[in-house]
Image (cartoon, rainbow, N blue to C red; front, side, top):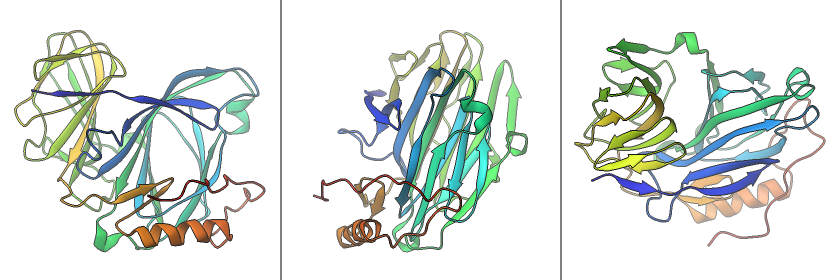
Length: 288
């Protein structure tokens, strides 16, 4: 039977998010070690997302929007606006700094935001690779349409499709919309998987899911759309050893996390061209 995972609420730069992973009952789903649902939220002119420069190590971030726009800038010099349906994949490796703000055009008018951000833990042997960044437009992503079911593969491999997004371990990340009564077979039954409901309602593994609800899937848990709706399904090969997570750092070594803390505190991380005037300070809480 599928198992509910209840999200918790957090404030990130003026935006309240629903955090599904890490969860007290399930730290990771495949390599996915962090999952936030941003919004849906609306802002007046002059208000909006303002996540100041901050560091990462040992992971890839994946930002995917349903509505709105986010201005991504990083210490590699990338500066671009993420639009709905695009994939923003940033690999921190040994260390990167980025900010998540808004363009002048977005912030100067009333606007909204709705999307997901994931962290994908790098395998231990790849945790210190060089940082990199890739942005894939929605038109480049594979899509399957059959019997009132539309499936977009955001990253990885599933349903005989392969995304152009480079991943470092076997995984899948799917955006699915379907009509009432549609049945969607669970992807990659040999891998771990979770489903998050965006709109409508679905039945899976003996439970019902409404918007903003998440569940872990068993291998035989197919998805039945109880109404027209949209869900995200993600997962991958199970990590036999889970890395440590502290603030924005992911590592299999507590000593490496402590080093990253010291590097950020002492200003040894690279800076973002054009966005160097402020940053998020290191939290006082130390790794356990």
